[in-house]
Length: 351
Image (cartoon, rainbow, N blue to C red):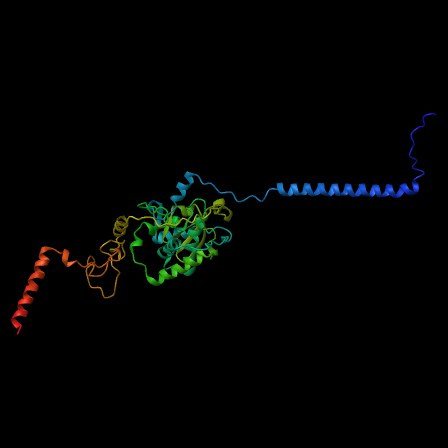
């Protein structure tokens, strides 16, 4: 028996049955291919999504030591910075043109729960720097303080900004912190108004007219740095300035508030000496002196160093009555003689 060749599949004989099979097979291939393509696209899209870089966060601006030293000289407390005073200063200030273009308002500075220390420091700045200025002028002083908090060249707390340089004999950033003004008792109404302005500023109020201003001075003085900055506004007696170029643009104010608020220890004797040297009268409000500080009262009629029988509020005071059994021999002798006299008197009148 001869070997037969292997059977050959004759597709012609199967046309009637094979055609639907081929079509179904091709459809299955199409579906599988489409699924593979979709899965691949999805995977590629996911990879692209997961590897796509997020928008870059604002980079902290670095300020070198030389720039920080230069910024520290931009104040009006250092007499070497003043080139004119009085009417000549007003004339000189008037000749400095205002910068072109409107001031760009800052984004609001908002503390969710401002502490008493931050509030006090900002209130002090508003009161001692601008108590007699119009409302917009006082708000502008608060804005300058908060602008500095966010500027890379300044401390990152409210009190840090306000008291910057207060340890110096001259050259502090806010004059009242080193010229002895703090020794003067604040007037109640202006102080309360300053506190409300400070509270509003810490809650997000923005004074738009001064924009990114970081400096100001009264119009009756002319500091050297007034020629080096952009003059942008005058509110009341104060002229306001911003840095030139990038340093004065809103995008440069990238500093982050650090929340560490503290009022530094001050040398009150030095402050008093400077105040008196300027021809001022003896300050009525001084630092707390243990043993001599009492709360003032309208009926007081005593010398300044006489506590007058009132409780010293600087001490943890409590009443102490001596125990007769532990008293001195003189005290016991006095009590004994009084007791003997009483007994004799009783004997004389006894029936």
